[in-house]
Image (cartoon, rainbow, N blue to C red; front, side):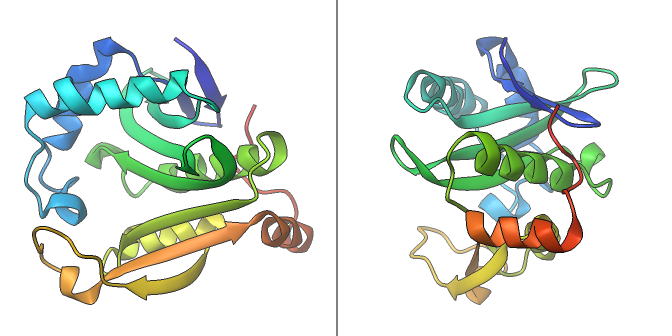
Length: 197
């Protein structure tokens, strides 16, 4: 398996076909899925037949960015995943940042650590010019992660979703950070924590 990056506590690596059960378990947790499906689990056959094959296919398409399995650097335990992939196919100038972590990994700064490392890698090594992220407006925990990483609120909007879930009446929020903003922020506060190794 290919390691994409490491931080103080995390290893972000490529998914493999052997990870199907880990994804099924992650997407089967109602609390993990609360702001995505209203808590409904993703059916295991959807994860195995559609989600995982789509993730694996991204590694073979330039620029090879996509979803990265997050494992605990200390014990190798699966924590969830981080997303870092182009918003337009093949164009690395703008990438979408996201994550989905097990509840056992919540409230310990791991989401911020992983996201910050991806942003740093994108701007220093990959030619990324803009990072964007989206969540429900009521998802205050994810909004805090975006802000800690340096992303700024761009807009609140209402998508045309097939099914409303609790909180969707408040809309979605988009956050973003440009390479120039990131550079200016680093100049003010010094090197970001969670640097890749």
